[in-house]
Length: 387
Image (cartoon, rainbow, N blue to C red; front, top):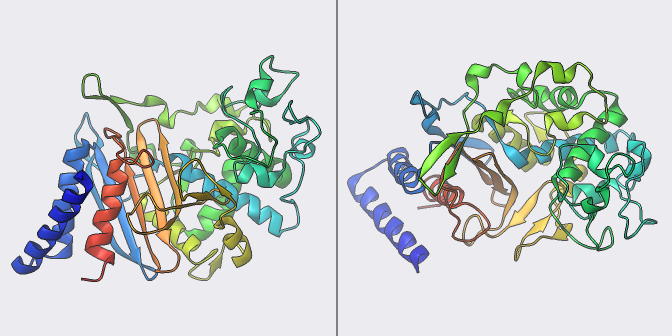
């Protein structure tokens, strides 16, 4: 009922906008100011694309709550789990080059036995990790491969569910950190450098998993919200990576320092360029990142997820829950207080990027935070929908 009245209100406001001669940009700004107020957002960055072109790119609020410094368009945010799409892209590049197989046994690549103790004869494959069907879990944590190593962890068995690998779905960050290590093992290149050289630099975007490769003055501070006292706390760890931690780096084992599962830092504008590459099935402005067949596989519906009418491919989701009445493709992220989304309609050729560095996180549909749904709906209403 609440959703009905919200849509009715926006319809009335749209009529008022037309009668008063208000521009799309003016209407969007007013809508976003209300969205920010309603969700108590610290800052917000949004981009809408249509037919291969950016039609709206704007930031609101603060990159630094304490100093009240505004969020600028070229500022970068840690985008959480959207980072998985970059890791999956790197894996598929290596598959295209014949250096890796999706059916490869992860144990053979990592150099130690990685098996579900309940199904010790069932290999864990690269494709299982990509689609979250390996039966691996985050119950032990996901920032060390010791959690998978029976000789280094007394609780390694906790990292596994009791269903057979390949037969069920559970979202798993440890699985994607493992994929990052596989990129290092197969390519011989440190994860952050591989992603930069083979994806970010060819696309001409300013981003990195390594904070030391970026200008820290462009980092958007991330804040967690406390419902107990309606306050925000700065998440200092969001951009922490001690230089000395890289001194004894071991390829294929220290990889979690860069968080292949959630550690990329990028601006909304540049993330929109990456989204356009996916919308064009692997190519942007003549630059080929993936073959079309690989991109299509990445975006396919390989398995059902925990949510109704939602499917997972390879670090790409298909969902009906972000924009009512529309099935969108992409990925979202939540970590340390940041909420992010990168979703598009592959048939109608429009898409959205939304980032916030702190908000209440309230979710009416229990899938996406309201601020993501409301922002996408605002962008669609003002810049995509035919009036």
